[in-house]
Image 1 (cartoon, helix red, strand yellow):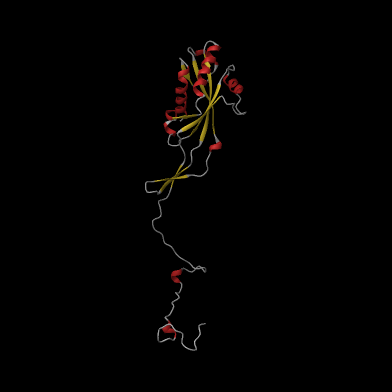
Image 2: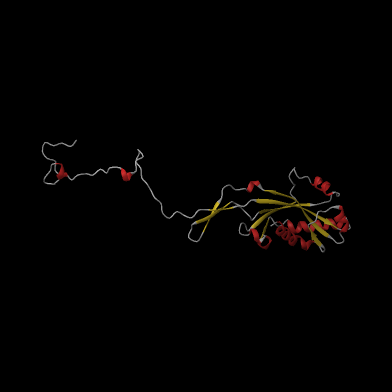
Length: 220
């Protein structure tokens, strides 16, 4: 998935430079080997976007609507790129950065072919931010110190994408028959409980069977 995001970013930036779009760490050794105008998009940070995390699995059903398995929702990650320009003159580097901004700023999301095929079943667009100040925990000066190079003008480009692989849980087959035992409040199964049979009125002293109550007989 990450390499697919790299390729999407490469296609976006390629029209801005006559040379190459690279993804190497911009160390001093790398800079010394560079021999053509280059835009470098260094992936310096990858972390989960916890604000997008969902709780609870969702059901996957077959054509008959029967639940076949349950899947955890995808987790989204923020891929942060340090985009820099490398030429022989600072003025040319600034032109390259301006060209990169002109290509990136019109996009609030990546859509269409820019969305990797591996995540198209999850989403049709990926949020992208350009030159937004990074979090306090990610100082660009510290990044350049770690790379062993000198501080250069750069664009902080962040693309947020779901990770396509999620945990899947198989479910038991659907219940097609079951034994049901009905119990009374005393816990005795209904099948063993004596049944109450209502006798016909004639059997209670009314030979006519008309249902009229015999004289002198009252119902308790």
